[in-house]
Image (tube, rainbow, N blue to C red):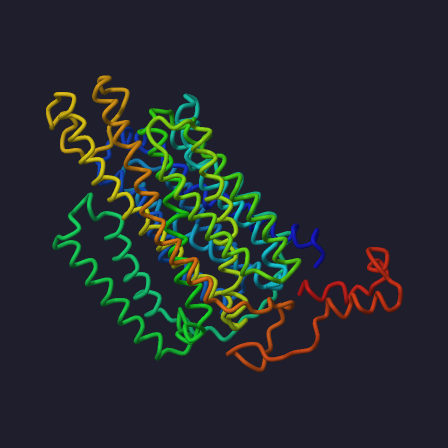
Length: 545
């Protein structure tokens, strides 16, 4: 398809991805008001976020595998429908328990949109061109991730709206996405004989859920070295071990073990985990730094994160275009790793009194680097995977990246909390204040309700602890960069055709149709749109089956 046709086809996908990702972060600044209105506890506060992330991450492999078995377009529409249902019910919630359950439903829909957008694009866009369009996906993800808390703060602060509109606000956008998907998205049917691995789906999602619950709640709801930790880790590992055994025996495994025989896919998965820790945790840590380390409002904190979003969006789009034009991707991923490391080191040098301009300048390399790396790892995995396993391969990389993000938020958050405890204790002692002035130190303080000396101690603690956490993340990106160096650079595919004679991978096929068409036009002196108007209708529709 021409660029204009492709953009029209993926417009609904991008809009659906935007609204589903927005829902994950829009409640961040609205949660205090929500819990106050619904009379929720601190545990409920945590689970409103955890339930959504848990469902989104655990459901990704299932959606991805289903995309290899059933009609992809209907599956995308189903995921969007699940998300809309969860949003409507969440807005109608009358208790914390109901809201948590509805956020879980929302998360299942969001997990479907996250994985299926990549699968749908892989079905209609050759890998050689996919980098260009994945840039738009990266930009969409970046904007939704950072603008969510900003929009949520504005909604809650607007008297005639209220917190329920955090869930209703996305419904018109989701409806528009549904209309665009129905009218513009044309996907190859590619339905195989359905043999769904229900046991694998339950075991994988159950094992992943146990580990995600442990990562999300350890250090807060229970200790890192506690009976709950042992039970969740043991249960998660046991379920995943049984899942591996099941996957080797069933006809259509949820995550085909044959994928992990490919060295490139394994390296992409490991690198995606490391990159995910920084990609998901950086906005969270910057929010803490601006709000608690410098005492700024949620809205201002969101605006101050614009350099990160802008840099990520810019590099996602422009580097994707360069990869599509040249077919070379490794140099950009290596450069991106170096930029992220540089940015994290710069963020590690900031302090409580650092000006927003300098903090913004330190964010730019992180955003540029993440934009170069995070989406293109999926392109590489899709390029090396058998075309009949495109959905499973795409969803596996995204699942591991999301798991890395959850791990990064939890572990780096625990490091920040531990560091803050030490800094506040020493700060209070230096000011002659009792050690229990802030209680047990587990709750996030409200700077507006604290006296000036105590507020100064808290700001200094957060302004020092958060930069230390950025430095702690540097080794992970170093590991990701080393892994990327070992990924063999291969030519990106220029076709999306699937060889029907094999399910284990593509065989050498006919020459690329697009290259032949260009060659033919040059030979006969035919160029550009004028010639395409005289092209037979049957030929023009080849890529729109």
